[in-house]
Length: 282
Image: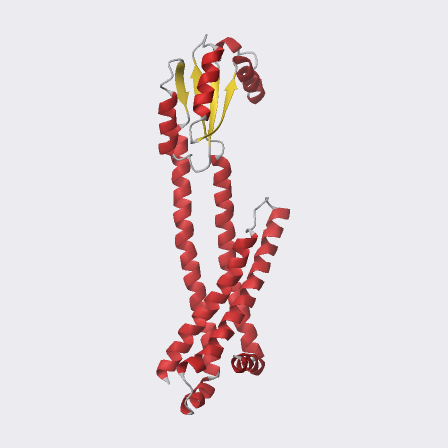
C-alpha cells in the first residue's frame, strides 16, 4: 500500500499541470451539480412552506353548544393526520377580515360570519387524498354546515411538488452522468500520459490490479479535493445570493459531506472506466 501511495504522489509530481486540470475540472463539474442541487433544495423548501398553509376550515351552525364544539375539537385533534385544531369565533373572524381587507371594514359584520374550526394537518398528510378523507370525516358532525379546504389549490400544489421532485431526480442523474463523462475524460488524459509506464509494468509481469490501484486512488483523491472545492464554491454562491438577492437555504452538514464523498466516488468511477478501457487495449 505504501508503494501504491508513493506511485500516486510521484504521478502528481511528474504532471502537476495535468493533476491541477483534473481537480479543477472535477470541481467545476460538481459545482454545476451543486448549484442544481441547491436550486432543487430551495424549491422544495419553498413548496413545503406553502404546503404548511394547507388547512381545512369547518363552518359551524349558529347556536352550536360550546360543549359540542369542545368535544368535536378533541375528536378531530385525535385524528392521526391532524396537527392542531383552532376555534375561530365570529368576532375573531371579523377582526381578521377587517385587518386583511381594510377597504371593506364597513361592509363586514360579525352576524354574517359563522363560528368555525381551522384544522392544520401534519407534514406528510397534506396530499389531496388525505385532505379529502379528513374533510369527509369532519362533515359527519351534524352541526358542521360546510367544510372548505381549497381542493383545486391543494391538487395543483401537490402536482407541482411531484413534477418538481421527478424533474429534480431526472436532471440530477443527467448532471451526474455528464460529470462522470467529463471527469473520466480528464482522468483518461492522465492515463494516456503514463501509457508507456503502464506498458512497461505489464511487460515485467505486473497484474491489472497492481497497475489499476494507483490510478483508482489518484482518481478518488482528486475527486475528494474537487468535491471540497465545489462545496466551497457552492457555499460562496449561496452566500452571495442570500446577501444580495433572496434568503436561501444551504445543504445540511450530512448532505455536504456526502457531496464531497460523492466527488471522490465519481473520480474513482471515472478513473476505473478510463484505466479499464486502456488496459484492454494494451
